[in-house]
Image (cartoon, rainbow, N blue to C red; front, side, top):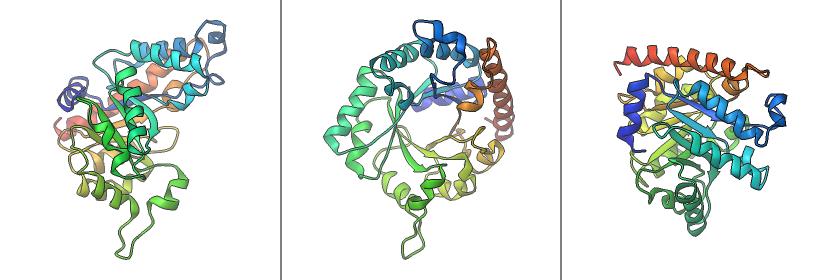
Length: 272
């Protein structure tokens, strides 16, 4: 999916919601465990319940690869089930030397046909640029994450007072364009979004941390939204684990719709 198509979906649905499919076999409703592929059945029902309200799905690859071959099969079935007009993100956080990154890119873009993959930039440009060689595919580069431990390195200052995440943004923004690169910025770091927008005003930001992690959607929109919206705000646990009984999918729908309504209001205020 290219940039124009993604923006069109945001405008059509009045939403910039991304639903994270962090599907844990130990957390899904017990009645699903009797089925042949409980992971896929859970995802299928979540997708059916939420696809009206979101513009992206983000499977966290770790939750699938930890299960071996069956996990990869569940992931592929899930990816195939997601409607074609919804953006897909492989939350894999890959990043290695160039020839290895090329293989990762082929795995997620050619073999599995994801629209995008999250990438760690700390080995330099050769760890990211192989992901930028595919038409209408995206690298989503880690910039400022929402986990507590991320602060150990990401906010280290150089002698001029510039923090490491700022240096990463300034260096990497020229590796690609705003049509094939996005950045991960945690919702719990919303106070930094104005500074980030000064460096990358036009790039899309993937913003995890709204919901269970305590991120504030209003603040994210206030400081991070641009003229094209420029945001994909992810909620995982807050939506997919809203319920744990037979009505789990309906509970997830309710939570997704709440976020959708709030996003529609924010987009309207911005004139999008």
